[in-house]
Amino acid sequence: MSLVAPVIEEEPSTLGSQVYADLSGLIMRGELSPGDKLSLRSIALRLGVSMQPVRHAVDRLVADQALEVLPNRAVRVPIMTTARLEEITRIRIAIEGFAVEEAAGAWTPADMAEIERHDGIFRRECRKRTPDLARAVMANRDLHFSIYRAAALPSLMPIIEGLWLRVGPVLNLDMRASPERIKQGAGRCHADMMAALERRDGKRARLALTADISGAAEFIVSRGILP
Figure 1 (tube, rainbow, N blue to C red):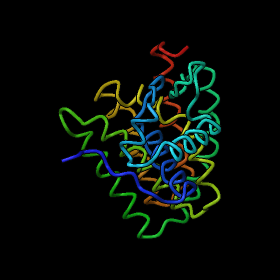
Figure 2 (figure 1 turned 90 degrees about the vertical axis):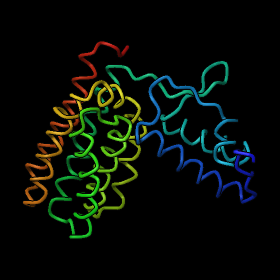
Figure 3 (figure 1 turned 45 degrees about the vertical axis):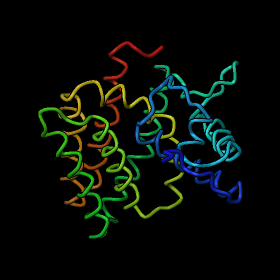
Figure 4 (figure 1 turned 180 degrees about the vertical axis):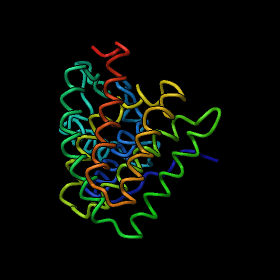
């Protein structure tokens, strides 16, 4: 029995958009790390598509600065520099801080149910003696985005997604460093943010998010592993 999915014959633009969405998700959820190389053929086989939509998706991600093409034509996740991380961190604090403050005043019961679901997944990993770090990184991303969607500002989401395409891989250098980083870093900030959201206290929710984003960046820089 073949484990390779059959190639799907659809419009190239449609498939390209789907492959783009799939690869974007991998990057934003932290399933790829800085420096990871991607095989276009392996992606095509994994997704059951031809090479054309994969190339289309990769071209878009290169334009988004989420991937880069090396001189030998290999495709990889860019290496993050300290200066670049500090720049993106400042922008994230401004934009994502605005989003969470807006969400505090706009969330609906359905929004909060979704936010609490992702927060619960993250907290369960934090309580484990040996957390599943990959699952925690994904839950972190899902929690953040469920909060940002609750702001009910659709035009804001592509801006935040663009930032996460750049920073998603480097978060692995923080949250996958050790179980304690999850518990004492994002875990504590998430608890403060959730409490503020439930009280609809936008300013405190924003402070908690700022501490989360800046704390992760400071830890990554302190490790001395970025060029």
